[in-house]
Length: 266
Image (tube, rainbow, N blue to C red; front, side, top):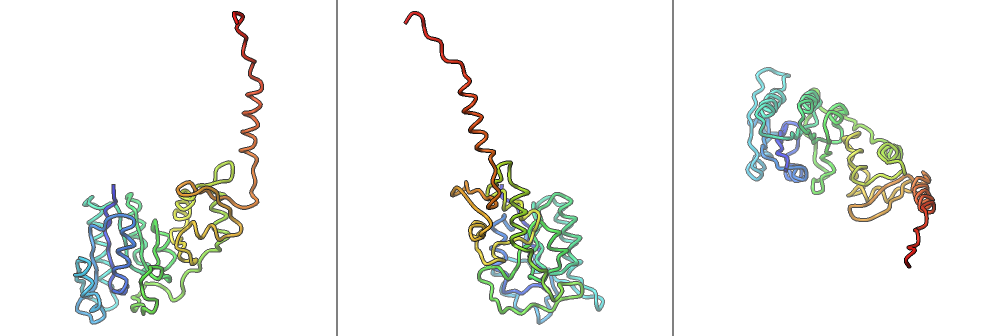
């Protein structure tokens, strides 16, 4: 059954030019049944969102700044998320923002058994990236222009510096070692799930590869075998004699079987 995803967009904190790409990316994981964008639509800074709302059937949610310095957009998005949680009509949430204020919301939704995706810029605080099941970097979406100027970040939003990517060799080697079976091999699918579970921001595109298999096969310290859906990964040099021992044991057992008795009538 396809997951029903509630897509909640912090329009104050996200460029409208990513609208089509982020929805296409989220469609890989389920069906966006709720699509809402939050912001003060009287502001000139959100004019670019106007055409995108109709084009992608996104409902605009008006928020009002009643007090200077307070972000009413965050509050409205959080309240709606909790209402949707208790409605039981969605299976997953996509929080589209680079604002660390949504970290606790992501944690709370996951505690209730919901899958949470966060979609934000590369400089989204590590806390929010780690609080979700998967973090999707806006800059990695295929057709998004690279020269998009980031919206002015509200207080508590992303810092200027993006969290550093983990060392690739260390990440992949540790992943294979932890996820592999006794013979040192792990299926590519299991390996990918392990990486995304332990590091929600992991994405082969961050390292210049479209797919995990392409990334793995380009690493001199990893080796693969099989094809299609049966590809397995192992660390080069991590040899094990487990399969050979199994074969030898089977041959030995076979040699010990008593010879078949001859039929005296023949």
